[in-house]
Length: 444
Image (tube, rainbow, N blue to C red; front, side, top):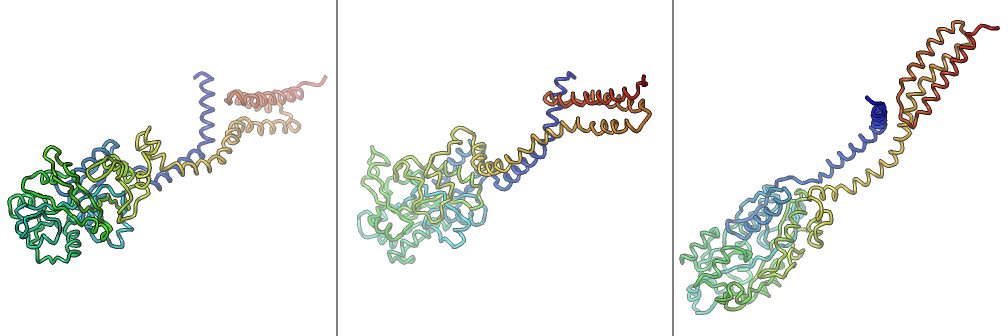
């Protein structure tokens, strides 16, 4: 091996040995910090959606598509609706889920175990009725009050949808006894079939206008949408309700559907996550929510949602940042996992660097000591030989030891910056040799 390469490798070895403990300590601290912070999220997450063909299912597919670009698999868990989603979250069977305001009773432990990613959209209470049903009320006019529903056959949806609980509160506020109605609790699809077949007079469910069922019923001849003329009063009496207005002609301009503005009451739907859900996943879902729910719609202005209004659960810090600000700077230019790692580790990395910088000053002296000790250890043997010169008459043996010492010194390899130490050792060996040679030479 060429000497230059050998000297370089030797220097690198000495440097590695000297800096080894320092590097091992730094790596150990980084590993412990990574284990403690757990910066990178799991690659699989479960999202509780809703019944087939519902707006929840549609939104779930959109979330899954966006998170797939970041390497996260979103497993969509069908459910009966909002109340069922909340139960799935409580039981730990889902990591996130869509929950509608006012459709469930919130208990004390929910605030500790669940967190909100913000209000995503309003879900108007759609109460469709057959035109023939209005005649049963004794008045040939459009229905605009819950009181007019008495005596009709109405489907409120399954308990898991949360609508029965919501409608129960509204009926109670109108002092309507449940016995005055013929109530069924069919799923949305079979209930719609029964409604269109004349077996039901009215059907009610809460859903975003993106629901295929809503779109179909709004354009079905003989089916009318109830106008909640008291929507303002409902919003004042129930904090989880807001007013919504369906503008004239917004469904179909050519056919002028609806033929007049329709007032509705609308609970707000939020995306709820378990408190144990990884913060990076919460951040990703919150950012995806900005993309999905940010554009203008039938009942909202652009960038009106997501927001922090009408939330029954505490807002997570990650969601609050996503709602207030655009994507973090690093995520605009780096892959998500890299940006997320830096964002969640930078403080700890700064602390580690602050601790390691003073310790790093030990490395240069340690390296110097290691290289110089390779030379200085031979000075002990050289001094021993010199000390024995005055006490021995066998100078030949000392010269033989000195020759062996010089032979070993010639094989010492040190970096070029330390060759002066090596040459000094050889020079001192030569001085001792001259001293021995003077003693060995006969006197004149």
